[in-house]
Image (cartoon, rainbow, N blue to C red; front, side, top):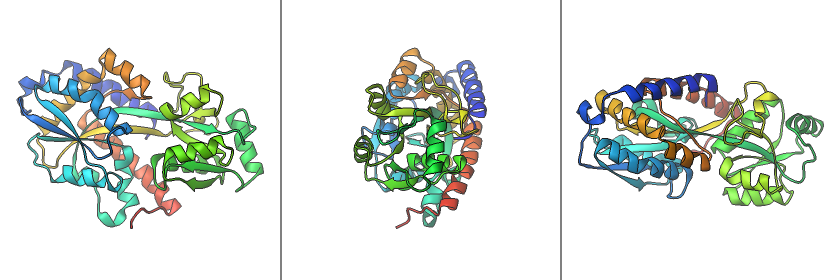
Length: 327
């Protein structure tokens, strides 16, 4: 969730480099012929699980191993996270998780999570912009007018999220902060409940993922005032970026692949090379687009640098908001 210009440069360079790297087999760093657990710390059917299943079969073919997706949900992703940190560094376990990993240390400060110490970042594999939408209670037809309305009615307007500390909660609070607004947060226990109240006019705004929001926008039930990428996205080219009105605003969910701690550098590079070849396949790109995703790959070092910047950014916001999920 750092600047898109920097990210796109890293993604493009790393993917191009990946196509020139020798095969995973020649790297002699991957346990060929073995069954590999692709650990997903969220429930089956969710966004992270979908990304894992999009790449699992092709990853198996690229590495001559069998990748089996195993869901370990619970604790906001912490149960699967801890399982990955305790796994043997022999290549038999790989974890794919979402950008929630970047906020865990700040939402659960008592747990001592340190992703860059606890795991070996391998590559980002996908990113996803969201839509800033308003419901029928809002008369504004564009983002500038909505911001002006919110400033005329301080503390009156509301936005929904799927829960305190969720990515879409933080995305909306970042918008609040950067636009100088005080739109009130109304957390829900699930996205469907939040969307229902938005459609019913009881809530004014939501930042939601593309697959959920776009059908409602196309059906005329919601208005999409902006997309959260810094530039227009090929996934929704008709929607202008929020950054056109709120300079430098950006929120992109992302998904990355990790190995357990102390995994060899050669193994991380071999896995990254396989991922770089997979994500550029036309059928993968087409499938990803239907899910609101843009697929690409980074090098382990670039991914680590990206995570460091992303964690600093969201850590500051979470601290400023005084949010904690510690029980």
